[in-house]
Image (cartoon, rainbow, N blue to C red):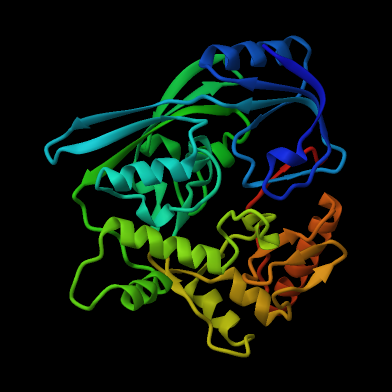
Length: 351
């Protein structure tokens, strides 16, 4: 195991923020994961498992322990099932967008709306990654993990992962217990693309002639265009890309709460069904109604010039500045609508 001391963590995150890890190691195999975990346990040292770094805010002081960067690579495809479905078994360190592209080239539906999302395969079940009408929970068949407490490998079915909106057992009841090493996705060869989200529907109608079902590749292209228009596609040199994606989750509230929130807004409250008696409310709308506009800044931390939901590092921002801006936004939304926005990024190195 190759250990480094005082390794800066900012370069490993899309926000480009964060102090050093006291110790840092990269694992290219399951055996190396076990070795690193054992090394930290022997020293009673805190351990954090790092993936693609696209959903992290690292403290300015860094992390006083071992950061284990999971770099496992490899992918197998198995054809099976009555409908000839394909199971993609991808190692945790595989690039997520690369997997989406591979599936689309193979003509397999199920994750086309998740194109352009930065990060690695291992992070997708943790957050139940979703966008534009799809969630990975709908296609995940199995998740292989290393149990950091029991020091053994285990596998969970989708039902055992406890998936809900942006949640799983891995970021809730079992937060910090498991390191994901592989995810199996069951996709549909020849399946129709999912075009349920209004933004995506409009983009498809603008680029595909009426009456023709769009190809998976056309849906992926439309998703990428939308993401880039919102600064949510990683593009070199684009300052709006120095973010952790959506900084706040879209609140899921009761219909009664939604009615009360609607009365506090200056414009009609947009809402989407989220289950019996529940609706999902766009956090971006709440933020804008609370008085925050695109481009608003506090020091070197700001709101994206293209998407109210993304907080960006305008150059040299500290984690403290990002959190101060996030707190200012959350306080204003709570004061106006009576609901506290929940942050999406994982906080690393904070007490």
